[in-house]
Image 1: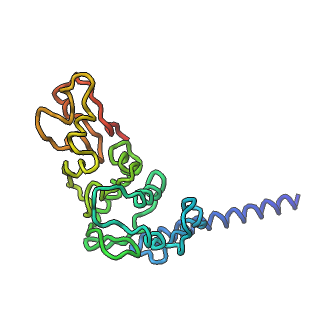
Image 2: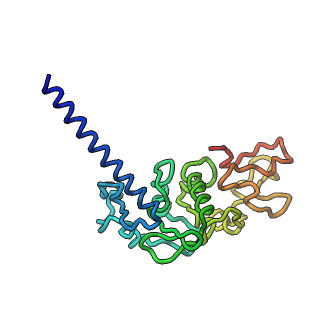
Image 3: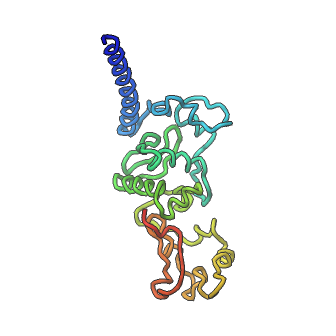
Length: 244
């Protein structure tokens, strides 16, 4: 009987130590994020086996902080409309629903002055507290909603792909020529969406002339077929119209 109790006590002590170790790693990451600096935070703060998170066949990585990645995968600060697989995969792995990390684990931020990436020179903008809160909400939608933002995330398109090099603001919009960089030219898009029947019901060849893409396509909310406001009997669908 004593042996059973002894084994039970050993198990409980070992289990408690393991749990405390996991909690401490999470606490260290959170503390680093709260500081806004996080100089001591590394990938190994959360990933004890750093090699396990590196893709198979990837060259050996020296170091365990963010600069070990950005030395090769330098951030593209040109703001061009293009895919960015590295940035998208990194963000998708750390924001909801796959992760739940605070932005400041990897980023530096001084409210109203700068917002950068640890180990990388330069700033992406000067967001205040409200701007950062909005960006967190948008990233949560981008990472796991059923809206167009998540469709872009799955295609490795991040904020800069639509909004350019500046950090997005609450009242931002996206111009048609930005959308057409990837989805155009317009003639090609018109041909792609031409119905087999009722060819005059092409949403990209409206009798209203040139209208903004964002009239129908909402990145961070439910999209809506504008034509249906008047033509209620038309059978027209649009991606990203379902709520999350």
